[in-house]
Amino acid sequence: MSEAPDPEVVELATKIFDLARQGRTEELVAYVDAGVPADLTNDRGDSLVMLAAYHGHADAVRALLARGAEADRVNDRGQTPLAGAVFKGEQDVIEVLLEAGADPGAGTPSAVDTARMFGKTELLRLFGEQ
Image (cartoon, rainbow, N blue to C red):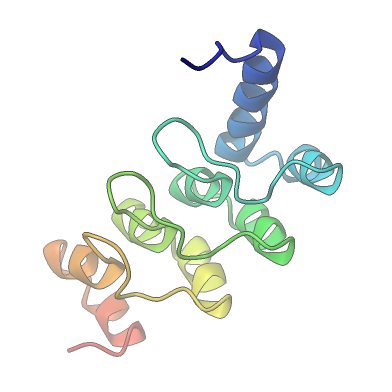
């Protein structure tokens, strides 16, 4: 039997995930620089990078990646930050992730699959697909 999580820890984690969603880069990286894992994930497996990417915060994504976060970390549904950015049409985030080595073929659906689903031919070319 596991112990219930400390409410203060849950509150802090919630705050950090909200900072990623809101793109509050300076505050977010202050926590990471103080010891919060750059690849911290929530109860759905969404990393800080995933949340920042999905909400269009390229600077936060770049800062997290610079601190060791994984560009291709999949959530519990098999999705990657790059596929989320493609779905949301976040071009700046897509470029940051690709510069960091994100794999357009990773995840389910992958960024390539997502671009195909939505007819984003310019992204398919960017990913080296036809």
